[in-house]
Amino acid sequence: MNSSIVLLPGDGIGPEIVEQARLVLLKVAERFGHTFDFSSHQIGGIAIDETGDPLPQPTIDACRNAAAILLGAVGGPKWDDPSAKTRPEAGLLKIRKELGLFANLRPIKLFDELADASPLRADIVKGTDILFFRELTGGIYFGESGTSGSGEEETAFQSMTYSVSEVKRIVRMAAQAARGRSNRLTSVDKANVLEPSRLWRRVAAEVMANEFADVQYDVVLVDSMAMHLINRPSEFDVVVTGNMFGDILTDEASMLPGSLGMLPSASLGDGGPGLYEPIHGSAPDIAGKSVANPLATILAAAMMLRHSLGLTEEAEAIEKAVAGVITDGLRTPDLARGDQSKSVSTEEMGAAVVAKLAS
Ligand code: NAI
Ligand code: MG
Image (cartoon, rainbow, N blue to C red; front, top):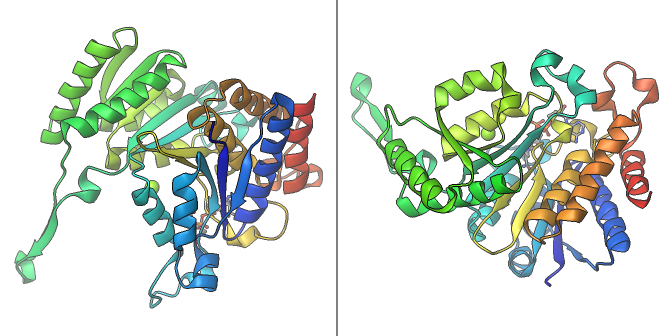
């Protein structure tokens, strides 16, 4: 088995949180008798500082040969100069493209003990556990675009395109994941208005009928979905949708748990290495202070074990350990809600997860 894991700590709090995830993975290796082969490489602002390139060639080469990649975050005020030739984010966009990562997975799971942090009433959000599959390399963000005319007649357009093969591969991936959960899949589109959505709906229905007849399947229009996420988020399991709808719905859904510090994500392609990261950014305001919440990155490491290394039991062990420390009342400052006296540091939170894995 290829067990080479590339770490891309990046900028800001990236190095602090990736280190805690690495320690958790080391504990998993010890407990389950695996060897993970870690190597650390540069991306983002730090890579610009040291090489002039946000994604240096050695990083690309290492990523291509890895089983999986664990990323912290990139960016920060130091590299925000609008006149700069390269920006840290360019490194992230490029690695996704280089690896053909067409599916973005975003689990939105609420830990019941943290329900008070949600902007919604606890009785509405409790039990929320959704896995989004957002198509990442097609659709309107990559469609033909242009402008014409001038003055009041100046016009701009951007076209939305989806092909049968693009729809099939993401629907298959999502349906497969549904089988490993509660066997329910919801596809979100705008088939009452958009031609690519009509193709999406037809192809998705065919895939589900022909290959996943055992999976309970339904379709929802994107505008309805925006309402359902606020009204009854706990009723959804796996959700699959196109690039733009997924961008908007996953950002909406990421607010449900009330803390960015708990949410991981994954980007997957066909067979090659997957990229795993927290959804939050490099949090320059708290970098170097040992207060960052490492749990999103630790949960991203669990996703990595499940989706890229086939280690389901190990992934579940990490998720159980994270749930355990939350139940025990451990809180980094972002979760502590006013009662900062009892909050723990980044390192203490990581160590608590490691300790749970040992018990
Ligand atoms: P951010 O997610 O870095 O921070 C937003 C707020 O959440 C801040 O107050 C921060 O302290 C807090 N926060 C974020 N993660 C946390 C954690 N693990 N524990 C505790 N608190 C946490 O978003 P922001 O401030 O808009 O962007 C900061 C930098 O990160 C920018 O340069 C931006 O471009 C970059 N960024 C990078 C991303 C990536 O690498 N995937 C994604 C989003 C932003
Ligand atoms: Mg977005």
